[in-house]
Length: 497
Ligand code: GDG
Image 1 (cartoon, helix red, strand yellow):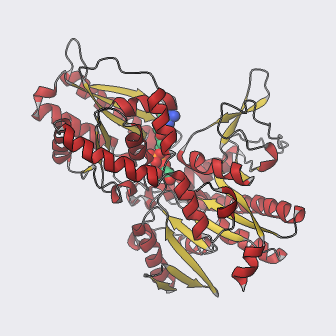
Image 2 (cartoon, rainbow, N blue to C red; image 1 turned 90 degrees about the horizontal axis):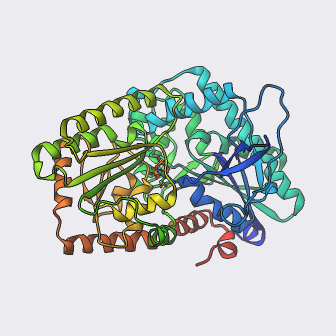
Image 3 (cartoon, rainbow, N blue to C red; image 1 turned 90 degrees about the vertical axis):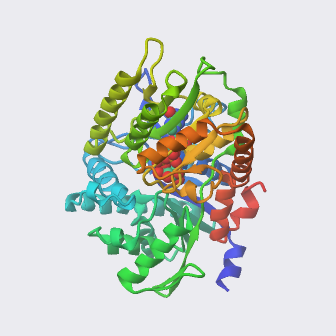
């Protein structure tokens, strides 16, 4: 059977994502060196690629001038301090692009169209044929590079079965293109996809003028993974209503093109032990112990509900003036997609709102909000998570949200309280958090009040459960889940149980 023959073949992993686990930057001598980036996807996937000795196809963060020759990928300079350093340059398949393509593909289609639409915010979405054309071309380019990686593996070893794992909304068309190329060349591969953001309901999805192509693209896979069951059901619904394909809502299968595609909820986790350990080691960063810290950590993105959150805090200070000089709201907002207008507008709005609230409530010795527009080191972040009394994770919509998970991992001392939006994927599982609808500003304010006045016993019970679940369902468990869903032989070879 197909299954038995695939068991006999050795699998090899190829990850395809928009970005590589590092960006290239010129050093002082003008030589390109790797600079590591520690986003959610990278932290999750890089260790697997390293352990499996796999390949990674992605963009190295620099643009080529038209006609410019592609530079070689340098080896990592420091193999000890960076967790991803063991990816050798021959494991990297770079996808270079020109700035004009990147603008239309990434800023235009990915972040101007897909991002808002998939977060169910269609009014923010733009739909331009030029952007779509660039999106299609870039997906073709990534697919071509992935195919080069496939051929490299197959030529080296006859009995190898490439397992191609495509990531996220930037590359929804790539899988079907890779399948076609592989079929033309008579090469057998396995194809999986994981979406890191929500998959919207059909009445939103169908607003996309290219909805058919996107569904066909994803159905090029053997398995399509989402964070939670809701997104899986939305996807199945779209396959049925857009195309009238046969779907099974019990087994989560779609029949298409004589193939059966499985759809799986694979909730992502974090490197729990790593965060807990960082929290053990990090020095204290906020000196005043008198004031309780309410913490927010987000990319500056309109999906994260930052404006609503500040309004809730304003409401809290108005209604409960006893918190004046007693609490600090520390918001870290990491600059993101600064070329896109929506993000520039949000930055303006936040600057004004922070100014307004600080102006209204500050005293000679205290300001209610400390607002960091920038990013901090992971060690410092772990210290903030550890020392916060309350962490407010209140997105309007969010695929999963790792901040909620990292916060509980770092809560190794006097336990604090997690406030969580039901509209984050994380809200599906982290039941012991205080769940609040971020649109309901007065209720959000009361929830912060409730968190600040919660008894130690209750905080302990809630935090213990939250930590236990996240430790068990950490990022390694997520990888295992993916490999299981792919029925992969890599499971036995590379993942410590
Ligand atoms: C997408 C989906 C899904 C933040 N500030 C700093 C910093 N961070 C790190 C956090 C966390 C990551 O960035 C943010 O992850 P999220 O999950 O919260 O959000 P997205 O970036 O939108 O990620 C999301 C995720 O993909 C994974 O599938 O959960 O729903 O939208 O890891 O720690 N890191 C450092 N300094 C900062 O200032 N070092």
